[in-house]
Image 1 (cartoon, rainbow, N blue to C red):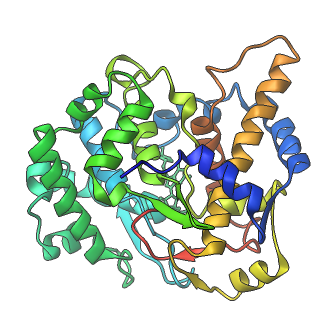
Image 2 (cartoon, protein in one colour):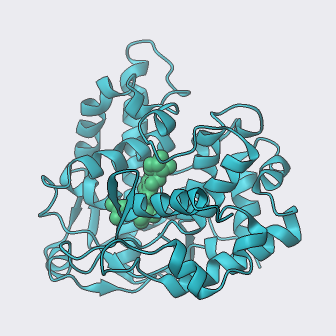
Length: 341
Ligand SMILES: Nc1nc2c(c(CN[C@H]3C=C[C@H](O)[C@@H]3O)cn2[C@@H]2O[C@H](COP(=O)(O)O)[C@@H](O)[C@H]2O)c(=O)[nH]1
């Protein structure tokens, strides 16, 4: 069965035919101008992944790579039906929500002596053990607990059977190619196969597979097995926060009909036309922002291809969305319950 087009080719195709979502070239250029002075900061750097995020591993070890694989296997669907009733995980005096609640729960389990990052453990974890590890400190549980249990058992079993239980083994097999690692992950771990059909054509987003490659690059600090010559070939990760921030920054626009559905809290299904347009246009919009950013530096005689790529732009925008929740509250995010993002 032939592989679908890459996420970037998919994004170009979707953006060219999208009806309810549009990428604003002018808006994307203005965002690039606004980001120009941020590029040299930690928030736009590989080092920021550890420096700015206390829950991320400090080490660049096999164990730290195993942490990244576990977390990115579960890195989906944290949004709460009601913002005043959400899953929170308290860890070392801080209450974490959303994606960070997952990281806090993993670190809490490790502190309790539960070998949660070891494939031989999560390959055979029971649903009750998963409920215990991911337990919330409010009465609202983390969403999709049963699906999390299923993908843990599935991913742990594949990691044991094909890669000796170590994701670092899989990373080494990629021979410093991000695209090869992406392919190894998508081919071997079914829950990472984030694909759809748009106007009768297969398209791919590979959000968790691409963020897994990016987080592996980050935790290994871009060195040794974690050096990827083609890291710039990755796209941003099409989740439900990046589209929200792109609309907030006026680089992307929704039709009135779509805005109405989003404001009503409509639940979309994975693969719905509007959902595919939101995800494809987000990827395409960020590719334009990267292009404009590189051009702005080029005009000043600076080749910034090692400091500007979709991964670092994504991390920056995702952190920005986290830090500007209040300002962004009247831009709705699209609601899908799925294991892909
Ligand atoms: N595009 C993109 N989406 C990302 C991430 C992250 C966290 N990763 C890195 C960021 C800091 C750490 O250093 C990690 O390396 C989580 N998500 C997605 O967001 C959603 C959760 O949102 P909220 O409900 O607000 O917690 C959910 O779909 C989740 O899959 C990212 O970076 N980019």
